Length: 516
Image 1 (cartoon, rainbow, N blue to C red):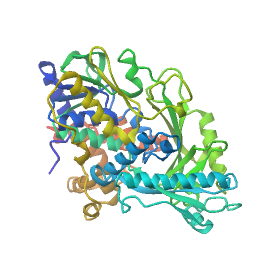
Image 2 (cartoon, rainbow, N blue to C red):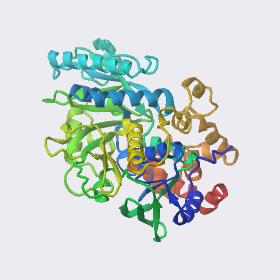
Image 3 (cartoon, one colour):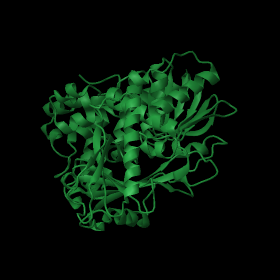
Image 4 (cartoon, rainbow, N blue to C red):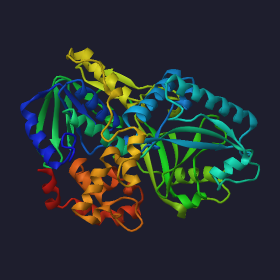
């Protein structure tokens, strides 16, 4: 049976857009990244009427350019931001144990103790890992969900990461954190859960002007303009938030990642933390994806100048990441091994001093003189708490009647306990990305057996994933399918190979037969 209440598609979008001009909603949300979708879910689950719009698509901005990790806050603890670290650990536990165990799993990380890592630095990192485990305990996340850290011998380190340089290797430090199946898939699940609670999730709707009573908007598909009237407005537009509300000053931080062939790293069985020379608390992250790809990334570089729709990594950033990789590996990773690269901007609130790496990751809720609530800062891991605080601010400012937030206890679409997920009759890849809905995707083969085949030879993505995205996840064009519902677009060659399958999934006859 199709998940009708949570399904997003072109037909639902058209119906809800047509009805909006004659209504006044309780909450209008601008922006459908993780935070905006989270605000829509939080408000709708409290019984408020919600319209949430985005000029582009779900997870179009920052929420698809992360390291695909759910962090426990260790780095923030090291910099003295204890409250931010605790909040991160709590929210990591919520996602892993209750709301999204189908999308977040425990991933081991090794920090190799190479000659570039002094014994004093290793001791500091080890103490930090123990403090991080104390955060896990304080957040009441069971060890069965997230194991504890420990010291590794050289033999154990090389077993987990055979590609490391053996010369001078003293062993490694093992720790664990949460890994997302995909950040954009998390946003899709949040948005669909919001829709199941009655929120109107409307992509390709651009906010032209905002005030405390609503917004003048434009349907980007038709060009028509109209007004959405609302009792309250939440600006969750991320790095673009300052362009919608006066007085919001942001200082974006840039993160760049490479997409590398897994074989180039010598059979990596774990993530890596590779220290940056001369830095005490910054690492390059090496994150295996389980599909023949590995992400190699660094965050917190200043991002000055105009904000582009799609940031592009620079050659210097790519070269820097390869140099750091080579400091730890036996065989260098060459540019030919880099399949693709991506960069994202984090919407940090400008504190007027220090580097972007030093700006607090604590989110901020700002209320303008005309009552628009803006939510900025924070990070992917804490999207739910950010959304809760934004809705609380709306209730305080507008006097809307609603109870306390319920989202810490509401499973996202597809969520179930690991033992229940293990019993599902569906390919493992689908279970890890769609949870309890995986058998529904597998059942599509009854209509068309080719839907359980790869979208092109050698791809892990199945045709059923494209069809499902059109019928139930609000994908409206090939870019939605390839760049967000799946992540084929991260590798240009894969995107080109998959484009015919994406265009076939979007054929009008196929769409209308499943969205009426």
